[in-house]
Image (tube, rainbow, N blue to C red; front, top):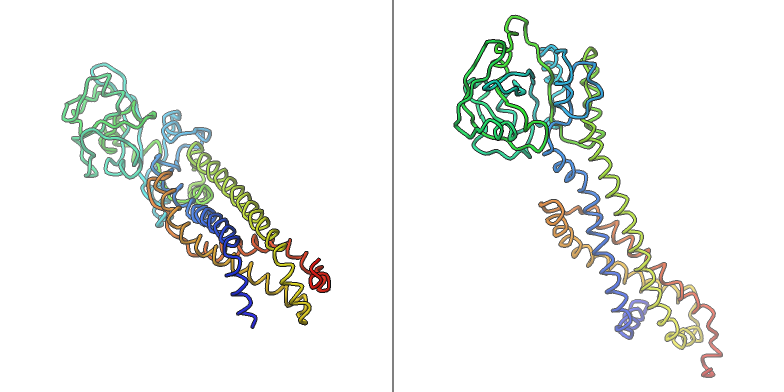
Length: 386
């Protein structure tokens, strides 16, 4: 009997319930999309910020206040021990480490024009700096002492192009290189020439001083907290050096992540309120229409708890059905949002489904407050037609 009464009530008020159902589905769709975005935003932002380049630098201790990987090394006249630094990186290597490379900086000349030369592992430049635009080609072989990558500003100043030759000179020593590619980084690296690390050390006259470098740059995947923890572990292994995240990258990622999460939470709260208000309006109208039905059920011996259970079941079913349908629409909406915002689809998160359905049931129940008025209906008044 309970199920039959419930079905008859829902079929008898299809119009009003459809309006409430549309509101619940719409709210659930947006909330489901936002929750999918919330759960996947950390991974997407990490991917987006990782293309900005190195986010951890190992440098001499006095360069602790530098804000970019290049500044940390160029601004310091000191050098660090390459073997010790790279050994610490290897001991802490995990799946989150995208790339790592040593850097040795010095000021050389090309046709009497001063330029910053950066000796490094040329095969790691692409992994360290995925956002760089390259004209020509990357250097794929580590230890290639004939090729170099030239920053955009240096190439423009010296009129260089891919396959051009240049002579890099330092204190009377000179080495000829072939330009493999022109790198456009949009940062300080546009003013540098990248050559093989060992070649740079020999050109600078450090061949007999052991493995001395200016810095080690690392590109680590993860949240700002993950990056900071990785830097802390490296710092513990290298107490004589300064190991720190690049503040511009890590702080920017953390601030943006916090703002997006706050925005999502605010939007979810607002949508829940609007959904509850729409259900409230529908239930208020239904309560007025069902006074006679409630009066008749009371006259036939129906208890108020049984009657209220009937109406609340109806509202709960409305919220559950709308929540499930909205979750399906939310997956489609989240994919569209991912394509627009990140250029990549957001992965469906099934743990968002029970949360969304639960929120919709609670919002629908909150909107069912007018049904409490039905408990005050007097059967005698209804039977008299008043």
